[in-house]
Length: 241
Image 1: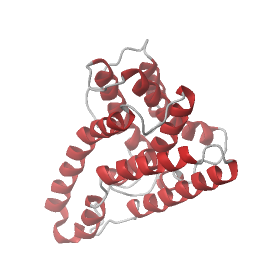
Image 2: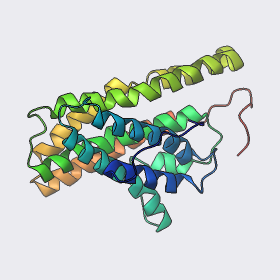
Image 3: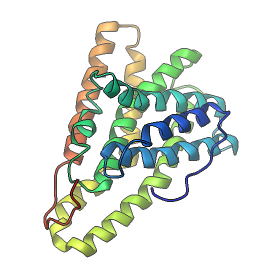
Image 4: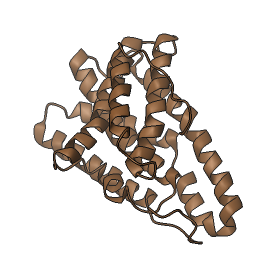
């Protein structure tokens, strides 16, 4: 996501999120797996800010709060690392493999996997509880789908560009990795996150079940993340770290 960064009104709640993302990104090198994800996610967040004001969402106020809570779950990761504390199992693969010689798209999709399949589900429940809303009521699901469409607007062309370039450079040798990355579906991730949100909301008042469900979700998402971050450099052409 190199290039001109999208400008966001810094006085808005989402504007503050973008500033926080910029602060996380500033000390990182381009090769850092977390930096790769932040570069994509910053632009996603900026695009959501634009969509909040252009009537894309039926309930923009809800989405603005959701986006801030959603981002906060990722921002907790670098804070935990700085404090020497453990991160969510959903984020462990990206944190542990951030310095490996991997294709940038692997880092981007691994971050999206953790952020959508885990963080988005958790964020929906947090905001619904805060606002005393049922996730299955009103426009929440429709806007949930729209926010994932915004993610897709940026991620799909990035993935397509990578795959086209990788096939040209590596030929048939890249096929296993291309298949792995192609099979990661934003739509399926969205649907899984929604199902997880409904489940977490249903057990929100049963602490033991709630905590176990969330732990299981984080571990499952982490397993997918490890698959997405499988080292694969068939011809030894990836730049050194």
